[in-house]
Each structure stands twice: as structure tokens, then as C-alpha cells.
Amino acid sequence: MVVAAIAVPVIAGFYVGGPGFGLAVGALAVGALIFIAVRQAPRDEIGGEAPADGSRHLLVVLSRSVEEQRAVDAIAAEVEKGQGGPAEVLVLSPARLGFLDRWASDLEGAREEAQGRLVITVASLAKAGIAAEARVGDENLVQAVEDQLQSFPATEVVLVTGSPAEDPAGEVAAAELGARLRTELRRIVV
Image 1: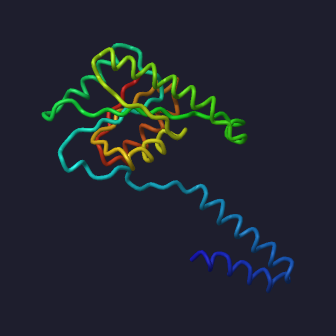
Image 2: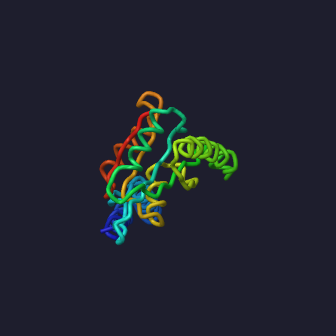
């Protein structure tokens, strides 16, 4: 199909306008195909199989820091629910890059900001008696979750975002994760 999408316009261009026109049409066809391919986002399901031992693993994904007692209590309730005792908790914060930082490959500032969110959140959870591990992930919330689920077998995902007006990226991520996650998704709006 791809070969036909390139070959047919090139052959028609050569036939109609000669070699120069055929090459130009071919370049446009290839450019259009590349543009379409880059714009296509994967829509596969995210997440693997549940752990065989029946243990619970909770992935807490941060769009915002968790300092408010209400949010800490909501996460604590998620950790404590279930028959198998408390869940193993991993807190994930994306390293959000600015436009120029991305092009300059300057990750340091974004990683420090993400680590700051992690320190505040893990300390708030520790104060509530919840032990958690912390990691910095990709700048895109959905990609960060997908990457982390390759190595952490989460049975539940808790997404912590701001309100839709304050955090539009969190709103988009919540909708996409809700559609693609195999595991249970909870959302806490801070």
C-alpha cells in the first residue's frame, strides 16, 4: 500500500510532466506519507499482566505535587483497600521540558523540578505512614505511564492532576489513560 502510494504519483508525474515533475511529485508523496506516519499515535492498550502472586502494586502518577491532606488521604485509602494488605507504591513524576530545553537537550532543570514534586509527595505520603518509591519519567504523562508499566506491574494507577482549567495536559492524559489502560484508573484532582 505504501509502495503504491509512492509509485503511482511518481509514474503519473513522469508520464505527465517528465522527469523533473515526476521527482517533485514523488518528493511530495514521500513527504505527505512521512507527515501522516508521524502524526499517528499508537492506540494500543497500556499495561501488562497482573502479578501471579496476587500482590497489589499502585502506580501514582503526578501532574502536580501532593501536599493537601485530602489528596494524601485519598491515596492512602487506595493503598489500604483490598484484602492482601497495603499495596507496593511507586510515585512517578514527568520531567516537563520547555520548547527550547527540548531542542537544546537540556533535561537538568526539568528533572530537578520533577524530583522536587517527588520529594514533596513522598514526604507527604511518609507522614501518612505510606512507604513509596519514586521515579522521574517522560514528559508526556501517557508515555511515562506506558514506559513505567514495562518494569512495574501496576494493578492500579492513580493519576493526580489539577483542575481541567489549570491542567489541560492532565485532562487529556486522564481521557487517554482511561481509554487505553488495562488496569484500574483512579483520578485525584488537586
